[in-house]
Length: 278
Ligand SMILES: [Zn+2]
Image 1: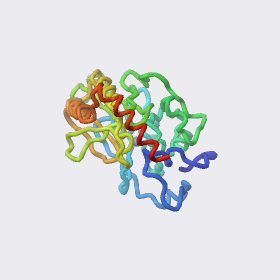
Image 2: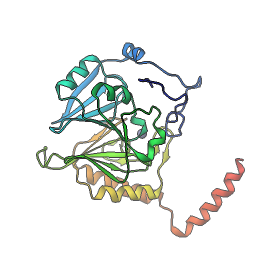
Image 3: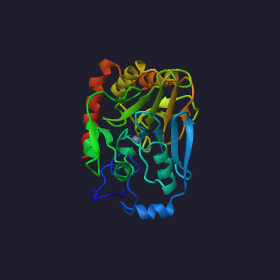
């Protein structure tokens, strides 16, 4: 974490069970000048037409710049942008808004909001986890937020209650006339490149609930998309993303399903066990 202004003493995102947890010697804080010395050069490449992937050469962290005539949208954020990247982004039209999926993606947003003079959107339900609150933060509520006619945020929930994905269509002018989903790690593509899953914690192997899986399936059924770009493991679905995603999530729902008549019994057992740890 670095910033313009002062961040909170303890980072509620790092100490949450969804994250890796703290190092044995506790939390450490860095400055942007330290990062500038340490970071490898950034890579900017076209993932597809009008979609620029910004990634480190040495880290599994990336964000995307969607080029749009009504103003470019940065999906996710990045701890680091070198001078050359800032110049390139400005030449591409700058950034009209930064859209953040959930608190794990809140890297360096305060600095880039100042640099590009743009708002940072995050869902109201995760507002309490915004460690560095600045005047540029704009929360949104409800299930969807249209950023323009071609780009909207959809609250998915599960990994984070307010966690959102971005749905992008190009009015039929994109490669196949179908949409694209950018999902950070609200959804992740498995090692086989065909399976999609969602976890409360990928680091600590904590799944999401059955009701969350069911809700995500219903939400995605009404969204048209052919390609999906996740983050973290840097695996994407270049084709047939909607079918692969929903098939995977249907399997997930079957595996974790608890029959209605078992639920009460299981709740009692959990209650009993919890007393053992007190
Ligand atoms: Zn995450």
